Image (cartoon, rainbow, N blue to C red; front, side, top):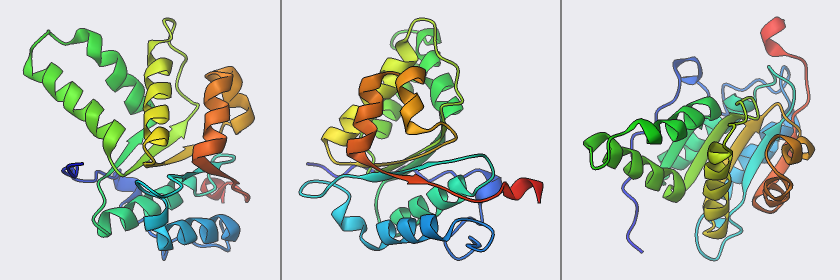
Length: 199
């Protein structure tokens, strides 16, 4: 299979310095840090054919450093030559909904499909702040997300997810099948601690 050409990894300015070395386990969760560092150290066993294809779902209350750890993992993947992407869930929802506003055959529509292909096929994807998006009335956006996660899981491409929503509640917010699928494709970590933003 032809190797996917990597797009530049775009990280929000607030997390431009987020690495494992800048994560303070005394203020955050040392167990979550250890799990994420172990994933990075054993990365080749989690991405692609003949691997487990598993990422990490970091779930917990706001302000515990979940995004920091996810950014640290995706930075490590980029440094090792893997194709990567970081996208907040709200941006993914807006991107998916934008499909219906694009003129058929336009360059904007072609770029939409190119980015869709990249989301489906990049080696390591971070989906940040899942569960805070609003449920779409038509169900199209949820189906797009579900399809993307299933494709990535089936082809053993790692997806890291951060969420304030416990995985058990994904059955209500999205659907029971998606919640079940997450147990297969992600190691689920309950991030502990106190909201660092209020200290």
